Image (tube, rainbow, N blue to C red):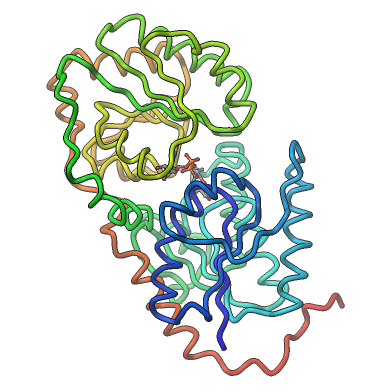
Length: 380
Ligand SMILES: CC(=O)N[C@@H]1[C@@H](OP(=O)(O)OP(=O)(O)OC[C@H]2O[C@@H](n3ccc(=O)[nH]c3=O)[C@H](O)[C@@H]2O)O[C@H](CO)[C@@H](O)[C@@H]1O
């Protein structure tokens, strides 16, 4: 019985791998596909799993609260190595750029097990930003067997790094599949009738923003809310204490800044679909917003998602508070400028990425010889 392991540890991995998991179960059967939750971000990942009706097959205990990236990587590699030794899968699926994804691809490589990398080829070309994600995804691109690039641009990045054409598949981003999975439940929703209000969705969590940048962004949000009475900020705050502490300290008592606990996937999509504008450092939300025609200000110096910027529905503001505030004020005051950013095309995918990925997986697995033995995963 073929066993395909889908390995996820964080909320975005769950959201972007759930469509692949469901498609693979539909194609190969429930006994052939197993979900591995590495425990990197258990609470947020579990919340996302519920939205897709996916129950984690096996939960690892990789996260040492407050542990370093080195400790997390050590734990993940050790646990996955034991799992792969005990019952070697035919293939593993990893997503994006987390430490979970890197450890999954690395241990699969050591065991000579093929790995499928979902969302391959995103590059900021700066290993400090995002940190450690840019380095993780570059390393995964050296290890993976099949590279599922969401866009032609991502595929080009992989070719430039020497990945062979036969190993690259342009699929679209599975996050658009996830949006399609829930959007029927959003259909009855319409944009808020109070045209005077300007609802702004905010999310921030990036490691490279922890500390001063996070504080400066909070002050910028407060300045923005104070400067425009029609602004209502909805901010689901990441569980990480390095995010929660400054956000609640600096924004916790503003009448029009609503600090929320992390939202389940459907609730977030409802807020996103009804927002006037998004201010975020999130990758996934940059990719989802075009599905609802909502403009995005990217609170980062760089983005590995230039497609939305090039089509004009997103703007990279960086993290200078004055620039962020004036960019948001312009889109509130200048309706023509705002309308020019409202697009009805999502450049990141069409909602059929999972189907393409699983089809390619099926073709690949059908060409694999029966495994007689696992060679050379034992240290020389
Ligand atoms: C460098 C970088 O960009 N890396 C990204 C990062 O993911 P991210 O930046 O997208 O991370 P978040 O912003 O945490 O997740 C966002 C998702 O969560 C949903 N959401 C959000 C708030 C909430 O209250 N409830 C929710 O349901 C939301 O709709 C969306 O789908 O790592 C991923 C894995 O490797 C990568 O794929 C991805 O490139």
